[in-house]
Length: 199
Image (cartoon, rainbow, N blue to C red; front, top):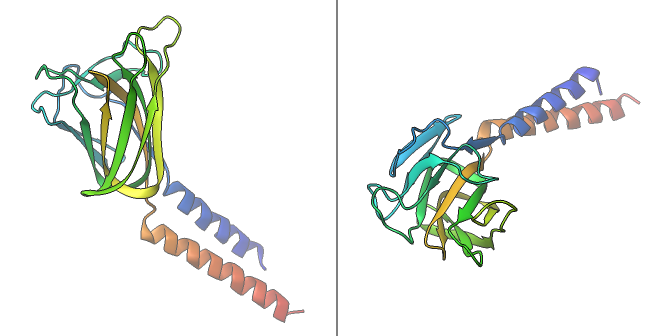
């Protein structure tokens, strides 16, 4: 196998790895006081944030937490309603999501649930509770889901209110990079076959 074919294989592999890069929605470019519903776009991926109480179910405000840095999105917003779910619709299919959260609890942390959909079809869900951190009043945690394609999530909690930040998602690889990987593997196999014939 020639050195150039090895280089081609690794270049194609790197292209496919780059196609799975993560995108972070952190609300730092949103003006304080921005309330749902609104859409943010990062790296050509759009996320629309909304709730059943819109307009104004959730609002962007400065973090008062340890792990939720910069701006956060939380309720109650200007609509003044509690016990809301936050809906996030994405413009492309994804296969992984994780985010930081805090719940409005003072004694026992309430569970927070991340429910994942492909359009309206339920894909799965995961539930976790935060922890009280030294010097901070509200429990904070991280919730994640991966392993299936989705384009919509709903975040809800048994707590009266909650906030989220640092929403990190990974896109489903595009067909073109996958076909490039197949092409690279084809060159690799062809090179190995040619080397055996040349013995």
